[in-house]
Length: 124
Image (cartoon, rainbow, N blue to C red; front, side, top):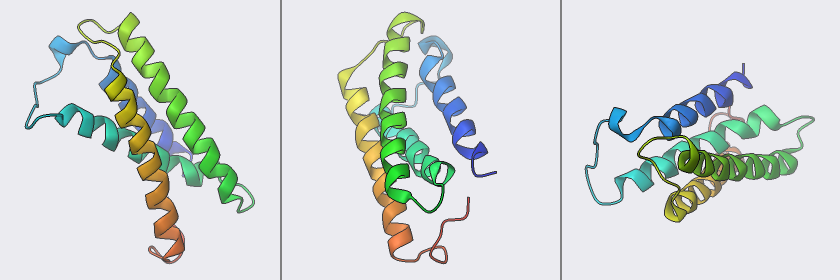
């Protein structure tokens, strides 16, 4: 089950990233709200990836893999937006928000586990 959650989150990222702009409701609540959305999507993705990638309690490896997969996904989504998504474009600041979100998700997972929140382990 813990391997299903990051896959579902990835589908959400794909949908949000590749939907044509005229099909997306305009939710610009404040300046840079789209960057906050990028941050949250990738923070959640990396957070969910770590337990799915942890084998034999080797968390350091899973942190690195989560970082690589999330950053690669961010690059790929920005590239695909420039090719396929009508009315969408690749933006450097979107990619930066993706990367910062990825790092924040990994840091949150690490802090939760280190401080024994959720009983010392996050059960996903």
